[in-house]
Length: 163
Image 1 (tube, rainbow, N blue to C red):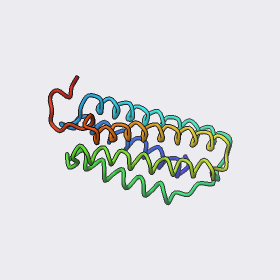
Image 2: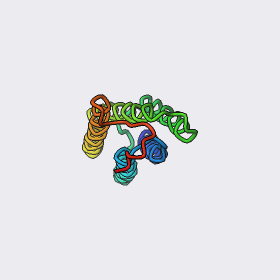
Image 3: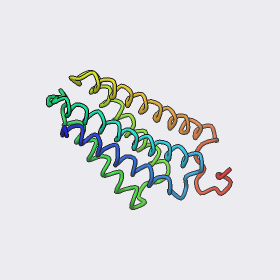
Image 4: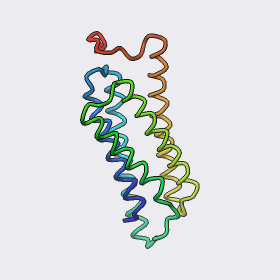
């Protein structure tokens, strides 16, 4: 398997794990839990998609993908840090939301970059689709954050939040 694509798979799986951890955050409302669950499911699908494309490229004998691993290694490290923070309950709800936006924004940039530099049409198509999913995740989280500021978003520790 291509080293860069394997790192991409590892990142998608790790980020899915982060979102699954955040679902259990004690201050998260049902809406936010639902957002994180959908995002975790999307990350699992992304990992499968990358695996399928990688398998097709390997079967075709394509070795040089034209992708650099420098950026993805940094993302993998950052995702590892955030996963540990989530597992050890070190993130406030607001930090968890902003960390999610941070990850999705970083993925968007990398996926768009790989779509431009990837040496194969399959890679370019896949990374454009992943970038679009990242954009949707970011937009959904930002919409939730925007409601924070008008009084309809985050409510810390409120039971009535579970409507």
